[in-house]
Image (cartoon, rainbow, N blue to C red; front, side):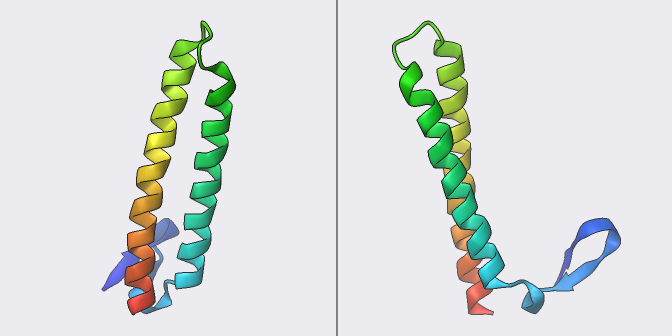
Amino acid sequence: MHIRRRRGQTATVSSISAAEVSAITDGIDVYRSRVASLAEPLLGTPAEDLVAALHEAERALRNAHRAMRQAYKLAAAN
């Protein structure tokens, strides 16, 4: 199986590093936590639209983290 990379480059599944996927997964979780921290002090203020947007972003990052954990499992198995 080949995976498309930047500008026409291809890579085989075996060249996908489980360590790289793991590092990206960790980074996503760090950003999720940072986004949650941004929303926390705004709870109960007139900035409810901003709070809602930040909560939506946090949920999206949580889903991305979950997907990357699955990708890690698959990369580690190869």
